[in-house]
Image (cartoon, rainbow, N blue to C red; front, top):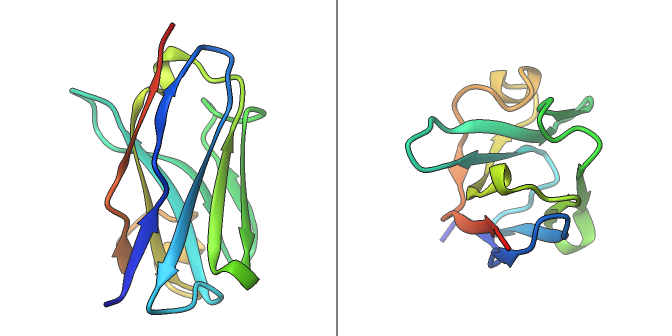
Length: 125
């Protein structure tokens, strides 16, 4: 079964850190752009970060705090989240789209091929 498997999120205090992982199961992520998205209650899903064939992208709200990286040997993409704020509370999803598609060229905007199951991140004291 081809799928993306996300690590568990969790409850973190403001200012804390958390690393999410997104692992490809049944296929290699080597030729896929990977995006991280989040959706807070009552809000639309937003793009957080993307690692594409050409570059990395970060939403303004997370620049300087979040870092996306990939480890092809482990078939995994990570989202390191530092200096977390209560407004980062959301369900986080990873998504994959092939290189050289619109998803790749547009910093992970558009139709992804695979989506993770989502993981809850709560930032609260």
